[in-house]
Image 1 (cartoon, rainbow, N blue to C red):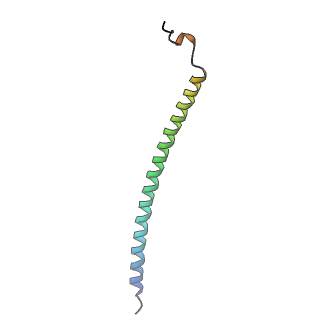
Image 2: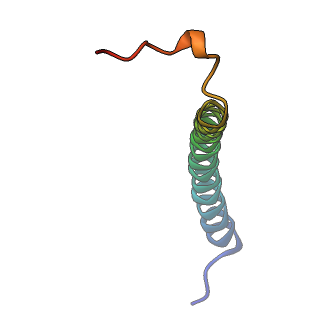
Image 3: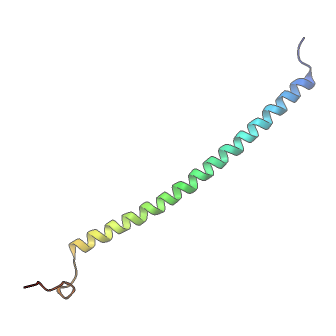
Length: 72
C-alpha cells in the first residue's frame, strides 16, 4: 500500500531538516577555512615583505660607519 500523503510530507520535512543542518555545518567549515586562509595570507605577505627587506639590505648594506672595524 502506498505511503499516505501525510507520511510522505513528514518524510520530506525530515529530509529538509537534515539538509538544513548539513548546510549549516558546511557553512561553519567554509567560514573556518576562510578565516584560516586569510590568516595564512597575512602571514605570507609579512614573510614576503621581510624577504624584500633582507634583499634590499644585502644590496645596500649601509654606510661604512655601520660596519665594525677589522681586528688586528
